[in-house]
Every structure is written in C-alpha cells, then in structure tokens.
Length: 173
Image (cartoon, rainbow, N blue to C red; front, side):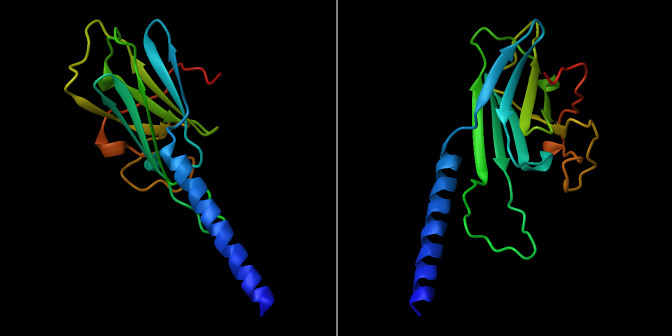
C-alpha cells in the first residue's frame, strides 16, 4: 500500500516536471543563426524531432518566421513517464533593415541533422512589406511531397502549396 502511494507520488512529480520543462521550451524562441552571402541570406533554425510536414515557414515584413507543431511518437510496450519536450515551437529572425530580398523564391530545407535552413535570395528592389509569403519545406534529400502526410525523414511536405524549393549548390558545412 505504501509502495503504491510512493509510486503514485513520484509519477505525479515526474509528470509535472516534464510538463513544466515542455512549457519552458515552448515559450523560448527557437535558436537560430543569420548568415549572409553576396546573393542571399541564410537563416538556420534548430528544429529537433520534426518532419517537413510539422513546419510552417513564412516571410512577413522583414522577418523569417517559423512555426513547428511536432508530435510525440508512441512506442509499443512503453509508457510515457516524463513528457518533457515542447510540441509547439516557434521563432523568427529579422533581416537587416537595408535588406532587399525576393521572398517568392525563398527555399526552406530540413536537414538530417535537425536544422532548418531558410535561404532568402537578395533582390535589386525590396519586397512589398505588406505581403506575407509562405515558403515550402523539403528535406535535404530533395524529394517533393505530393500532398500526403510525411511519415519518415526521407519524405517532404509542401506547406500550403507554395514556392517549390530545391537545395541547389548549397554546402552543408
């Protein structure tokens, strides 16, 4: 009887700690880097445990915005003891104020190492700041999704049927 009570209390403590850790992760913006080359900006987000269908990428005003709604896999024969990973994650990066870009040709690629690379080409004239541009997401194997849900890391998903993206000539280094 006492062992059952002790087990029940420890289960409740682990569950509460796990949920609190998940909430902290959900309230913290995704870690990111902003890089610049002669012809484009590259924003690299940490996107752990996601598939392309979990990710929404948008270019709004002068920002690259990312929203991840990931799911927990269920493992046969195992019971959840510590739900510590946040499921709804987001982040954004503001490009420099003098950045003239072409978000219509932006590319987003989910890499096998758990990072999301968003490449926004530079342009001669700036994009209309009132427009919102959705960016398609693919995995680094380059396959296109035909509107079905991605079920493995080798599949891709097109977010809201927007810009086709190909990871051409980009180094993974």
